[in-house]
Length: 64
Image (cartoon, rainbow, N blue to C red):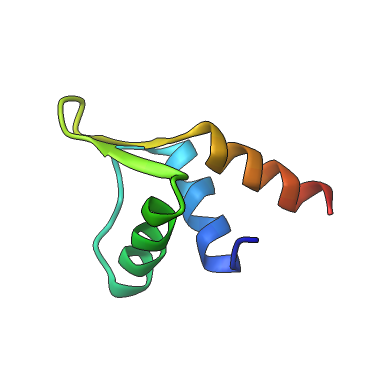
């Protein structure tokens, strides 16, 4: 289950994977999502990637 902040972070990263602003709230959400295996940072492309688990969790949240 995702928190509202985590859900919002996934949505923002899907829309703009190169822009992961650095504020504490978003940083904490990304750290939690990384630990859950939902996102990762691709250093070669220098952008965030939302993994299938993150997209599935987001769609599960929407259908509830």
